[in-house]
Structure formats: structure tokens, C-alpha cells
Image (cartoon, rainbow, N blue to C red):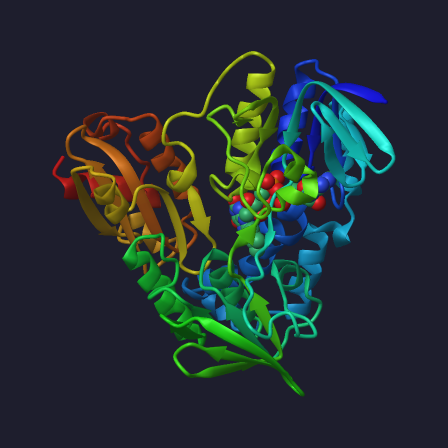
Length: 456
Ligand SMILES: Cc1cc2nc3c(=O)[nH]c(=O)nc-3n(C[C@H](O)[C@H](O)[C@H](O)COP(=O)(O)OP(=O)(O)OC[C@H]3O[C@@H](n4cnc5c(N)ncnc54)[C@H](O)[C@@H]3O)c2cc1C
């Protein structure tokens, strides 16, 4: 039996970061991977989806700027976009990911890992001992709810199909108007597919500010996406030309393909956790050190613990678990995780948010005031995102005079969110923030406008 200090199961972003940090601090570490080193994120989620979205976004931005606009009148070269996507995912070959592990001395065991008892992991015929800890980082898979007809379809797309497709269907129906549904609607519409997007809640992106949802919805409608909200997908039928989808408002939608984007599900039972009393299909609960209560040798990080399904937060949790195992405790900062985490939706306009929405702050019992400005309404906005629709909002805790939330909507606003994250996590008083002077003429002057609008 091979013996290590720590065995990590799952080499997605969360598992890789935990394994790398542990090994960098001198521990003997093994990582077990059943499919591709790099995980869902590198091959079927974050990376390919952004590769599919970026070219149309660049084209739209070029068309907003006179001089560039005249040069950018052609159509998107869809095949070139797909080829670039294949480059980004290395044609589903993970060999470029291996040197990162090798450089840190992390030993890779290929195969599906299962807990074989306390501090024991089985991979095929091998058994690995984990003297200090086992870290579970096995992520989630697309949820396929028991909707009539779904199981009988020849094939329903999940995120894996949508992000790796070699051909663009003429008609795509997307069930689910959350982040994955909206991003894929944007991408496939830009490739020329007729897209129908169906969301059971009354609006798309239901967890974000209402204005963010409205501005993304308007842009998708203008691009030609058929959005149906407040109605659930309730049945599927295979037809000669594709799939017919029944919607609860008594309408139907037809697609050559149907993408199921109805959330994610963990599979703890596949890890042998059933024997430890864990329920199938339920996230593995952890404390603020990512330790599984009642099993001090066991940690769960990333999507698997369900706290927040985002790569950067899984990596953060990986660092927290590693530090706890290393005896340098650095538990989760209060409020830095979960639904308040920084998040970006890469539609056009983008939505970049951190902390509370006004609504969620009020529901949390905070006395808040929200201030809104137009995102591109400053000198920098004449050069980037010129005239693009979008609102920025900060949410201020009136008792403590600090930011508790920020939402940016507009062209290429993803990188704005980190300044807001620093202000929120650092609990920077507003009157101090006032002295953080944005350069001219950058779009960051929107911070000045926000604080002026607030009354500073
Ligand atoms: C379409 C899409 C787009 C997304 N875009 C973004 C984005 O832009 N930004 C962002 O932050 N997040 C995004 N996400 C979410 C992000 O992909 C996940 O939060 C992230 O991948 C979770 O990382 P993880 O390490 O927990 O799990 P994963 O990335 O799922 O990796 C888990 C790994 O464990 C392996 N594994 C599973 N079971 C076993 C086993 N028993 N033995 C061995 N190996 C096993 C799997 O093969 C996989 O490699 C997106 C998700 C989707 C679906």
C-alpha cells in the first residue's frame, strides 16, 4: 500500500490547489483523478465557455468605436471560434496540466477514488493510506431532474456537450435561465442558432439585482433569443427533426438539440460515502476549515460541499483546507464565501457582482442604501464600452458606513469586481475609500461618481 500524508480525490481546480499547497509545504501528497486533470472547469465549463463567448464580445466592442467599427463589419468566423475553443481545452488532452503537479512533487494516481475506510482510499486495485487527511474535491455533475420524457431522449445536452460541440445546431432549446443557460444562449445565438431560453422563475438570473437581469434580458432579446420566464419545462419528446419541449404555460418549443442547464448535483455516493452515513445526491457539509464534522481526517472542498459553485471559491477553500491540515489555521473569513462571493456572468453586457444585492441585504436585516450610476457614463467610457447599456450599484451599510454589495453591469466589467471585493472584505470605511483616487480617463472613475452620488 502506498502511503502519503494527504490523498486528494479529484484534480479539478479545488483539488489541484489544495494538493499543490500541501506539497509546497513539504507534505507527501497524492491526487486521484478519474477523468481529466484540470476538472470540469478547464475542459467543460469556465474555460471553453469563455472561449466561446469572447469573440462576439470583442466584435461588439469594436463595433461601438468609430474607426474600428468600419473594419469590423464582417461576420463571426464560427469555425475559427470553435478551433480556438479546442486550443483552450487542448483537444481534451490534459498532458499540459501535469507539469504543474510534477513540479510540486504531487503523485498522480489515475482512476476513480473511493473511501475504503478511515484514512484509506481505493483506486482500482490499489489502496492508498492518508496518514493525515483525505481531501474530497470531486465537484458536481449536471442535474438531470426527473422530467417526463427526458430519460427517453436519444441525447440531451449538458454543459459538456454545449462547451465542446463541433457543430452549431440550427435550433437550440435551453432549459434553465441561470448563469450557464444565459451564457450559452448568448454564445449560441452569436453563432447563428435560433435559441429558446426557458426559466421557471419570473426572471433570468434570479439571484442578482433585478436591473442586472433586465439589462441582460433586453440584450438577449435584442440579439433574437426567445426568452420564456415564469414557465417550467415539463416534458420532452423525440421527434424526427429533434426534440419537442413542453412548457408549463401550455406552449411548446422545438430544437435540434436541448441543453439541460437546471443546476448541478454532487455524487457523494460514488465516493463510498454512503458507508459513512452520507445521503446520496446531497452536498457534503463542512465547517469553516472545510473539515467534515465528525470525521476529523476528512475535508470536502469546491463544488462538492455546495457552499458556492465557483472555481475561484473552490480554490480559496483548497487553500483553507491545506492550511488547516498544515497546522496554520486560516479559517474562512466571515461572509467571504457562499452567496456573497464575487461572481461574474460573461454575457454581453456582463454582470460582475460581490456581496449583497439590495434585496438580500434587507432580507439579512441590514439597514442599507443603494446608489446607482450609469457604468459607461464617464470619460473612460468614451473609449471602452462606449454607450453600452449597463448600471452599477453599490449597497452601503448605513450603520457601519461600509460597502456590503456591488453590482456592475456593462461591457467588459468583469475586472471591476475585485476593487469592490477588496472594499467589502477589507471593510474599508467609505470616507477612506473616497481617497482611493481613480486615474483619468479610466472607467474606474465610476467609483468617484458612486461616492459623489452617495453624498461624499
Ligand atoms: C458551463 C459552466 C461554466 C462555468 N463557468 C464558470 C466561470 O466562468 N467561473 C467560475 O468561477 N466558475 C464557473 N463554473 C463553475 C465551475 O466550473 C466549478 O465551480 C468548478 O469546476 C468546481 O471545481 P471543483 O474542483 O470543485 O470540481 P470540478 O472542476 O468538477 O473537478 C472535479 C474533478 O474530480 C474528478 N472526480 C470526480 N469523482 C472522482 C472520483 N471518485 N475519483 C477521482 N476523480 C474524481 C472529476 O473527473 C473532475 O476532474 C462554470 C460551470 C459550468 C457548468
